[in-house]
Image (cartoon, rainbow, N blue to C red; front, side, top):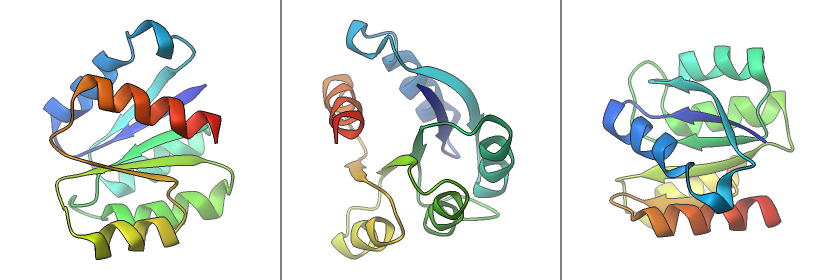
Length: 122
């Protein structure tokens, strides 16, 4: 499965990519990394990934708007929101726009692995 990582933090993008070295996630391949929603839409259209990790607070276009656009392009895409925003209203908003999971920062590698496995099995 192809994965697009979307986060304005280089550290978080690298951490998510590094977590994919876990043996249970060997079937996932990173096809792109974007630091904002505008970049994400361009990379998404180019690679059409099955999976996306999405930050909420980013420059140019936030994760809520980006999630909505990606779902319009590919309704069956699995989007996992990974955000430091811990309010339930934001989580519900992104889920209503089409995201299929929500993970709060900071997160452990084990929690991220479990979130990916749950996302692809649903």
